[in-house]
Image 1 (tube, helix red, strand yellow):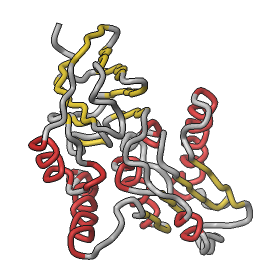
Image 2 (tube, one colour):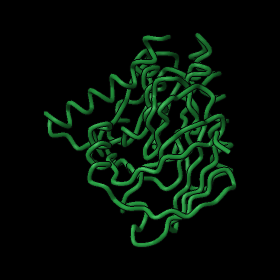
Image 3 (cartoon, one colour):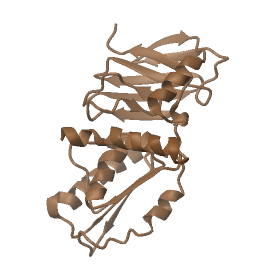
Amino acid sequence: MPRIRQLPPLVVNLIRQFALFGDIDPDKVYLIGYSHGGYGAFFIGPKIPDRFAAVHASASAPTDGTISPLTLRNTPFSFMVGGNDTMYGRRERCEKFAKEIDKLKEENKGDFPVRFELKEGFGHGGLPDRDKIKELYEHTRNPVPRHLSWELTDAVVADFFWLSVPQPKKGAGIDAVVRDNAVRLRTHDVGAFEVYLDGRLIDFGKPLKVTLNGETQTVTARPSLRTLCESLLRRGDPKLAFSYRLALDAGRK
C-alpha cells in the first residue's frame, strides 16, 4: 500500500512534464482504464480530480478506505462493470459506490457528475466501452470550481484545487465554498491549511469575508507576484497557480 499511495504524485509529475515539454492542454487531460487499469483509474481519479477533465473505469471497483466519493463533486467520472463480474466483489463494490453517489446527488442538485453502468450478461471481459474515450473528450476541466468537498484519504496528497493541507492525514476533511467575495469553510480534524484564490474566484477590490467553522473575519486580499510564482512552481500547472494565499488554522482557538 505505501508504494500505491505514491501513484497520484507520480501521475501529477507525468502531467507536469507533458505540459512543460509536450505542449498539452492541462484542461484536457483524461484518465481511463480497464480491469487492472480500471482499478488505477478508480484509485487515482478521486484522489487528484483537479488534474483531470474526466475519468472512466471499466471492469474494476473501488477499494474500501482508499477513496472518497465526496472528491468527485466537480469532476465527470463514469464506471462500468458486468453483471456477472462478481470476483473480488467487483459488482457489489460498484453498486455500493453508486448508492453513495446517488445519495450525494440527491442532497447536492447539479453536482457530482458521476455515472454508473451495470452491463447485465457481461462478465469481466468484453465490456462495451470502446467509445468511452469519445465521451471523455467532450469534457473540459474546471480548475476553479466554487464548491469543494475534500475528504483526505491518505498522508500523501496535500493539494486539492484551491485548497492545500501541509500535513495531510487520512480522515481529515474540508468543505469550502467561495461566492460573492465570501469564503465559507467547514473542517473536520484539520489544523493548519491554506486557501488559494485569484481574480477567477474573488474581487480584489472588495473586502473578503472568511467564515471558518462558524467564526467570521474580514480580510483585505491583495494579489502577490511572489505567491503566483510559488504556487506555479508548487503545482506545475498555470491553471492551478494563484496570486493570493490565505493561511488558516482550524485548530487554533
